[in-house]
Length: 360
Image 1 (cartoon, rainbow, N blue to C red):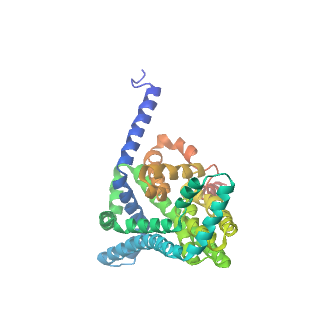
Image 2 (cartoon, rainbow, N blue to C red):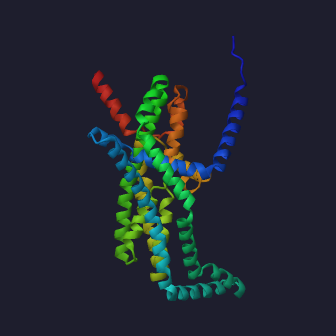
């Protein structure tokens, strides 16, 4: 006898409508969810330090204290690089005022030759004024330093989530008693997130070093700082290198003209395409088992939902959703074929080889 229920088409429509309503609600709550997600991911990254300290028989209070110090060190380091980069760029721009004036004169002459009127040219040049750009950067820096309430909220979240994380093993053991697949999915999510961060960090160091060497060779000021900025921006998949390329490209334009700026942009595209777009997916796919398309779409999607923090946390947040919806439910295992890489991860291939050799 068939089981009564909704028609499949109506079920799909209701499911899509419910998901859309949930997404709109998440977007409205981005002011709360973004710092909570950031704090949670930072604690997740640093948490193994606590477990290692406890395994080495450190006192619980000392292990917790060192965990909190490491958590705050990560936040201060990342924010410090971004803030210092903006401050140094804003401080450098006034020194190029003469070069900027000459550049604007050439742009003005070119626009007049193309048929634009004097009023239109003046309107365009006002938007390219170097002093306005430096003032805008100063405003951005002031805004970044003045949202005290958000900083206090984030630091408080890091403190309390860090303290709560010391009981994560007991919580997972409790979940495993009644929902073993959910517990396994959460452990797998934590493991894959850390592997993703480890792989991203490795390529970030390589990209930052390569960009630094290149900028030193062509004489861009503060090359090491822009290389460090490129490394930090590498944590935003696929689009982060664009942010990191703006300061050196601007300085190249002011100090060496259009040709040097084009060289900087082309080299950045080549280096970052190779080291952040072509090579990492092979290793990241093995680490997190997400396809390149899903990774790219997740960046755009989570940036729309949570803002800039969503772009940074796109892959870990996607892994969390995947763990809760796909990995924890055996009926949804088929969906892995849609979101996973087309090539079988190396870990799975080696597992299959060992199984075949053991049965032979």
